[in-house]
Length: 356
Image (cartoon, rainbow, N blue to C red; front, side):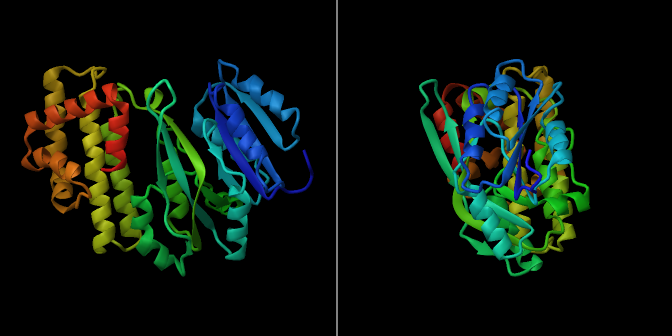
């Protein structure tokens, strides 16, 4: 390891990704910014992931591989944060990849404008069949530096709408700010969103780069099949509380655009919770499913959201109609239809989700 401080520390948790991890690591090695370190945490992989990364690390002193028992991605990222020496922190997933100029462009942009946070565009690449057919979707906004904290907050609803403020891997974070705030990843699934929320809560200087440098790989067969998450609804309710708290902290509860975004976000995710209950793998009895859906759509929160949200597509307006009417049977039928499409026509499901 070089005694010189790296400009960027890239943190990469890895668990059973033997088919992808070499590409992910090589995309870091190929960065035009040479002064970096890569910390890969092999999180108890039972396949060849650890051996693949060890072999690559033998050829590049900038790579530090840590092997741990399986504790999950949050613990892996937190362990790497303890060892990180870079001035800036970037988070990559071990099944994704980045374009070669990503880090150099981000660092140059950050230092030229004295930024605390850089947000760049990314591409979602969804593989929807075994032949490798893909649907690609770019998520980005025009390059800009927000003039002030107030300007960033007032425009954040646009970044949320483009999914640019949820994940850590399309961002460059100041390491000293992470330390000052004592930020760590929480031990929960979908752990990255609260980390980002904590970082942006009082952030001062933010800039956006339009280019889609990061490529997020989604294999539909692996990530969104007939999985049943028993606590998805509770998790979405918790996330909505976080968003409401953020708006209040930012003094934006009376801002029409920000408020509508949060309500639309809630109701769109409620549709996902209904679909989750309708998955064949769901362990609830039929009456239990019906009662849970009744509770979901009849709550004051859901009815407020469906009244105040402004869906951006005809499809979403149609999907919200039974919720607005509090029609449990029709809502269940809609959930079963979505679950069926998800299992049997991944290309259609991906396309509909991208254009909701």
